[in-house]
Image (cartoon, rainbow, N blue to C red; front, side, top):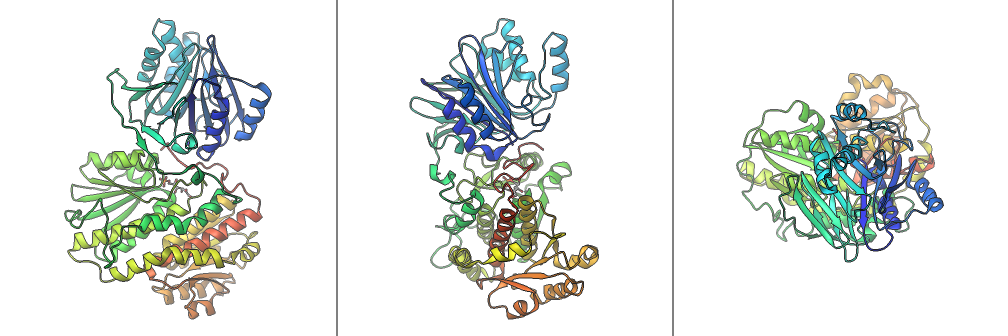
Length: 604
Ligand code: F6R
């Protein structure tokens, strides 16, 4: 939520800042801005709207500078206006600050600063920071000491970056929101997320909470707020710059849907042995033998992947629950040292999920992050991490990461079943074989899917319902989430058996029902299909190409390759991703940056 970028070099960095913001636009896109510094003052250009509005202003104003910060915003405090866009400055334009997070005590600080004569020009919580720094500079502190004095007063969560007139350096700090330094030759970078500067360097330093970094053209120094030096390692990220580009596709979402075979190959690669066993390097056999209970905490699409995994565990005798992380963080279930709390999070930065991890750790549970981002907060805070290796996902709607999460959670589930129950699941060999076939099965769908015409027939309806049971239930929920977030049309997912307990009242001839069939308990779902057909609703069935019973009952049939029921949900989900994509495309929606949403939600 909100993206920070910054660069310091020996020549002009304005284009680098703009490029850094373009690469981060998925983190927020309601306003953006940059600040550069000179000996006397800081110069700010900021605009409501997308980065293209900012680019137009930069073309007209032509600011320059070899030290600068930039920001793309997803509003929390204050509407998306020019005034509320970041960077924010003090009264005399000596200090400019960009911020990600929420400063909880900003109202008190603002009152105090206003009483001391500071004038505020925005409604944001962030604006207190440059004024606090200015106050500290006025009291004779150096920029470094003034920055530390200011952040010492803040309560809440933040990633902050600052430039000060006359200082060839960027100051930054984090507490609860990510920041990473990019190590270059003649230029150094700083951002909320690696894709911001990936085209310039893949050498990175992840900052920890309460770190303060001073970045100059020559390098960076990391200290704690009290000035104690800390050594943070330089790490290489193995993402390629082209992974974060559209590569000829109309949208990142479509590109990422098409990347699923490759992403799945990477997720599985080296993790299944030739004789059909799970090989998770991080977790050899016995790693989980003390586990009595598994609790997944996650949000959105990751929550649906967790539900999928819970089905795999519960069905094979491992006690497992799944919690919406925001709820777990509010009302945690009892845990102890035999509880494994699995935080499933693509970004590794979702505030609700991190809050759940913190609570679980305080209460003595063992924690494991299943994430896409090496170096993310979840990966570093949890006791262990398992990476899904999907590569960067730029489209706000999660697609390839759902498939990769399910694949990796399937492997984890097999390891857990064996360790917790003492013997491997009876179906392990079949499940793993199906998993190995998954990349080519997904490729077959991508090569043959013809849902575009179906999308045209379903673009203008009163509502869209998605139903499924077993692993097809989380797929139904995920299908509805994807549909609503990018088409802005009403869509809801239900457990197939739940429809008749209320939602059936909404079913009419103008509410198509997408019924997902996994190959398990399909006859029951077919009964539910008949219930909605009786009320006149057209039913689109997604199921195995070999399931004639399904194909003959539903009104339209979307086939998927025949596979193990526990794996089939991933294939059905790919078809639903394509349906949502094509409907959104026909409606002309902003597919990669849906309204009101941001990729990484770093506020609770
Ligand atoms: C939906 C979507 C969101 C995320 C959710 C959790 O397409 O992308 O629902 O799944 O915000 O994000 P992560 O997985 O980064 O914790």
